[in-house]
Length: 211
Image (tube, rainbow, N blue to C red; front, side, top):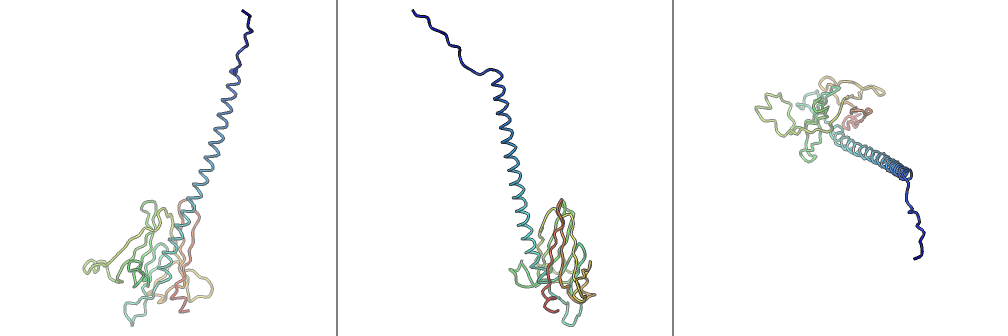
């Protein structure tokens, strides 16, 4: 028999295996980091888009009521108007009624509550009744709908544009019984957690047309 040369078996050394594993771990880590950053960016963009869309819906919904504010008087001979505006609360009569399909007038209240981290609340009451709570309980309060427009509101600030003053002068309060006229516009300022202030200006159409 002829002798055969034994060839040494080829393979990886321990150092080569260690380097290969290290490189693999580094590549996987970099890929995961890139994926995570991309995912977070997409998540933030989606969150901002949802918030922006929700705020547009709130602005449109609330603006419909305020633009339709009506100079409601308890009697045809009365000169006072039902419109009560504070910095954190607004109550008025609107010619718009969502509960009645957009027809008829409603009594609308916008307010802020510190419940559940701060909520923006809108209440609609139909038919319009300027009664005390005791009278409402005796005669029935009619239809009342309470809606949470936005949760997570840290601050609500409402201001009122005086139609009798030259230039742009905003008041912190508006008493329809005292002023006997609607404000020219209502400015609503909102601030969510970790967000810049959002400002909406809603012209009161009855006041604008009368000026």
